[in-house]
Image (spheres, rainbow, N blue to C red):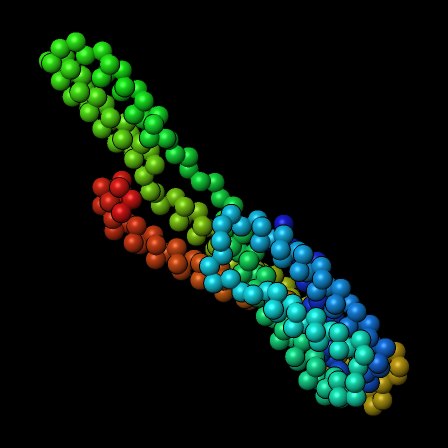
Length: 282
């Protein structure tokens, strides 16, 4: 499964602006910052609503236990609208970090819902085996009943037709019989994805360690200059982004591991079936 073809840029835009809100400090406490961030979030929500609707249309059926993404987006947009005319109370909530925490929770909820839709849509795009029409199978036997000239011949043709039909039905069942290929393929894909994402986390952890070392070096002096403060803020933003990315990747790993475990259980159950159970799809 490759989620890159289902990427939603508006979700990244929402993530970046939410990240800035969580970093409540004197550099980001101005009213103009809240208004600009509110506008950015509102635009991202509008685009994201359209993107999610388009993504859902990729799913060939009806979702079970679907998350109400519209309500989540309306909640985020309502908060963004309040930022356009920030009250004293809103500014205090921002300065204390409460506003950033609220928006971060809302973002995590909508991100999890989108990820669930991505996985379902990606998993649905697999090729289904074709089925022959019953009329096609039975059509070739019609002539047997039209040309009977006597009881013996008629009975012989009926018997021949039954045997032929049984052979056709058996052949159809045999060639459409369940196999373990689909389970093994999905397990292989899940295992490869888990390993790939673990490698990504390893690289991010190394990058995170380098940033931590840089942060310690910047703050090693008694009093930081303006440039050092700006550099320190950039380091904090980068660390936050890395931590969020690691959290997202770990969530994706958990989904794949759960899928892998489910397919292992299905494979065990499948291997316990007899040949005729597999043939009849019991």
